[in-house]
Amino acid sequence: MTLQDIEAARKRLQGVVLHTPLVYSQTLSHRSGREVFLKLENLQTTGSFKLRGAVNRLTLMKVRGEGDRVVAASAGNHGQGVAWAATYAGLKATIVMPQGASITKQSACRGYGADLVLAGNNLTEALEKAQELVAQGYVFIHPFDDLEVVAGQGTLGLEILEDLPEVDTVVLPVGGGGLAAGTAMALKERSPRVRVIGVQTEQVPSLAAARQRGEPVPVPSRPTLGDGIRVGQTGRLTFPYLQKYLDDLVLVGESDIAQAILVLLESKKILAEGAGAVSAAAFLKPLAGVDWGRRVVLVISGGNIDTPLLERVLVRALLERRRVLNLRVELSDRPGSLGRLAKLLGDQEANILHLLHDRLARDLPLDFTRVELILETRHQEHGEQVIRALKAAGYNVVDNS
Image (cartoon, rainbow, N blue to C red):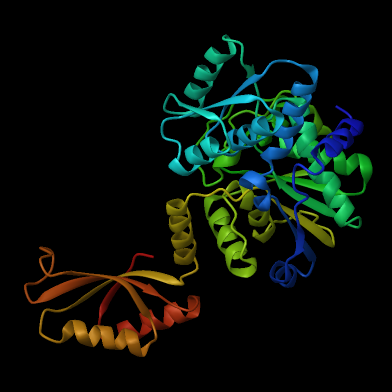
């Protein structure tokens, strides 16, 4: 793969795939003392960068007359990208998903025109089913270890340089390495001074392991909010490009990702999925020895997050910031006790989101009762103020936040 391959892909994608916005983040800039911009691939058609590689690969397949049926195994964004691109190219797509794949993503693939097959309990088992279709004449579209897919993803780097030629650093997620390899190559070949920093989750550090061993090696694929980059082994085709063009690699934890999703949503009204938020998570995390430069672009690679998961993520992030408190309070079992507790909380301007009154707890004296409270506060100091007020009023308080 060469820069010319990425430039040719850019021409194929023009008018088909969106040139997504690059927006200035006042909040992140103010917090860091740098100029921070967000590359919003969550606003891409299908909601992620994956469409770029899929359109490039399937357009070339159509031109070469390699067949009219494609298959992909995916639990999310890759499947949606292939489904949309196949419809655009006039090809027939079948997407194989694990049986536990979200209803939202199943509906999206069908909505983009693909046939959907549910098989197996995980992506590995779905992949086995996809290979059965390959034996029947379908062309398999790999999510990252295909250089025509990588070239399509690399068009993102060309857009960044077009919109912000003076960029110093680009931060982007790394799963199998397709986005990172293509984008880093485009950036470095066009502007060698630009630094490119990859981000993975601590749960699945496949590229970190590959860099240490000098070749892709399997690592345990543990559950993570960054499900889109939950890839247990770096691609064999992408790895040499990552070795050559990636300047640094940062690992982030689950709490970091949850906080980044919250910050993006509150500060810029940007909805990012877990994998899409890891660049912001890395930038927000206190890290020693990372050279961010003056002008930083954070790639928000996707926004396809299920609503129930989003709710859990936001509650977790708010709990960690102590803007939501989970308290257990013991009080006397007498008329008016619960009302007095509620009045105290109201006086402190704490909002009661949930209250469970347990009068049958066997570990309490007969004349006492327990209340489980979930409270909303304005900020961490306000939360601490509420707890101090409860204790000052004589309540036994256990903080389960």
